[in-house]
Amino acid sequence: MKASLMRMLSAALLALVSLSASADELGITPQKAYEMAGSGAENLLFIDVRDPVEIMFVGFTDSVDLNIPYLLVDRTQWDPNKPRFRVYRNPDFLSQVEQALAERGLSRDATIITMCRSGSERGLPSATYLRENGFPNAFYVVNGFQGDKAKGGDQAGMRVLNGWQNEGLPWSPSPNPDKIYRVDR
Image (cartoon, rainbow, N blue to C red; front, side):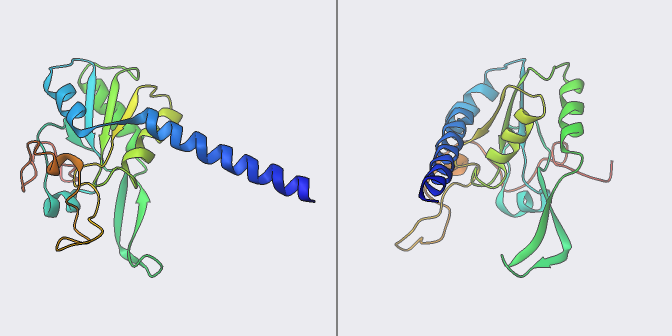
C-alpha cells in the first residue's frame, strides 16, 4: 500500500515537472513576441485568443494578426463556483486557425503565437491545444496582455506587474474592427 502510494505521488510529481517544463518551452516574452511580429516574419501568425468583449474593455494591440477566441463566454449560464459566466472552448478554434493560416499562405508548420490576458487560462492552454492537434510551432505570450496582479500596495489586485501593456508595448483601448472576432461577417 505504501509503495503504491509512493508510486502515485512520484508520478504526480513527474507530471507537474513536465507540465511546467512544457510551459517554459512554449512561453515567450511580450517583448520577443513584439519583435517577432514587427520583424515582417513571413511564417508567423500572431493571435489574440481572448473573448472579444474582454478586448473591448481591456484593450488591443494591432501587432496581432487577428483575434480568434480560444474560450468564449456563455452569457446565458452563470457559474456560481467561480463566480462568473460559464466559458467553453470555441468549437471552431482549430478550423479558424487553419483558415487564418491558409489566407496567409502558411502551413501548420508556421510559428503561431497566442496571447490572452495573463497567459495562464487561455494563452498556455491554447498553445498546448494547437500543438496537440498538429501545429508543432505554437507558443504563447508569458504574462499575456495585462500581466499579473499586484499582491499589495495601492494597486493590490490590479494587473500592473508585467505583460504586454505594462512593458510599454503598443496598444489601444479600442479593438481594430478588421482584426477582432466577429460573427456578423
